[in-house]
Length: 60
Image (cartoon, rainbow, N blue to C red):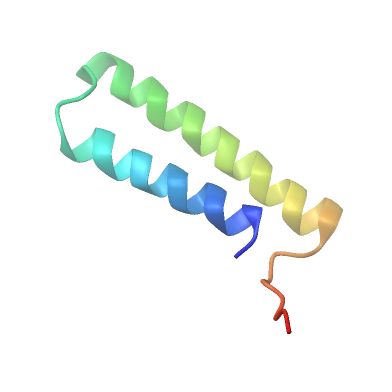
C-alpha cells in the first residue's frame, strides 16, 4: 500500500468521523469538508497527471 492509498484512507476515516459524530460545530463542518475535498482533488490531480501512477505494485 503506497502513500496515495494511505492518505485516502486517513482522510476518508476523518470525514466519516466528523460527519457522523458531534466533534465539530455545524458551521465549521462545511468548511472542513470543503478544505478536505480540495486537498483530495489536488492530490488526485497530482498523482493522475504528474506522476501518472496510482496503482500499488507487487513486491516480491
